Amino acid sequence: AQSVTQLDSQVPVFEEAPVELRCNYSSSVSVYLFWYVQYPNQGLQLLLKYLSGSTLVKGINGFEAEFNKSQTSFHLRKPSVHISDTAEYFCAVSDMNRDDKIIFGKGTRLHILP
Amino acid sequence: EADIYQTPRYLVIGTGKKITLECSQTMGHDKMYWYQQDPGMELHLIHYSYGVNSTEKGDLSSESTVSRIRTEHFPLTLESARPSHTSQYLCASSATSGRAAGELFFGEGSRLTVL
Image 1: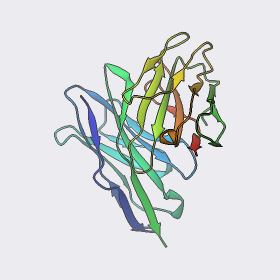
Image 2: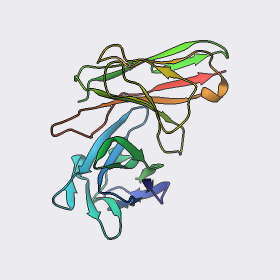
Image 3: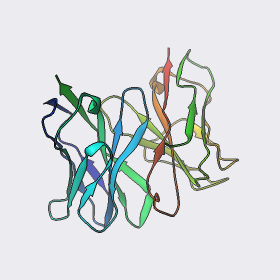
Image 4: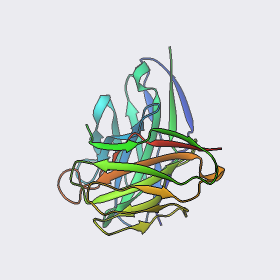
């Protein structure tokens, strides 16, 4: 069975500082990996995804993530955050052979401090 | 921008009432999903559908039911709401093939409060 661990429930960071949101997964099969963002009172939207190929994936709003198979990690990074990045971020994984079942982590709330 | 819509966005009702949460998508996606989201918790899959007349229960047991009579429509019904059903319900859809395969498109959610 697959699982996703987001170790940090909340991450405070000053505006214009870099940020990393951590995600580790466990799976016995090859996987697809995703990061979704949820702004207040809205649904989730896709930030970026890893399906295959380059392990460094670039997404929207200046975010990027790196797939590390040996460490089973898919950490999300941004070099300089903005107040508008305040949101909840969810890491997710799906079985490459059965992509209809996507498992989500508990989310990390990003607080941008002025 | 995703074309998936949920109504109502907010609903406050009394115990014992029957409610239906509507979800419609205009992207022609075969797969649709309902997730339940509570604060500080991961999203839990409660129902999904591979296409018309297909419905399956998800990983989290739910007293709700769903139907899929049309491709674009995937309503969720609670026959008798209870306070334990208070939660946010998120509808999503995904494509079977193409560049966006495997990616979920979410509606804005329906926040249900049962008194």
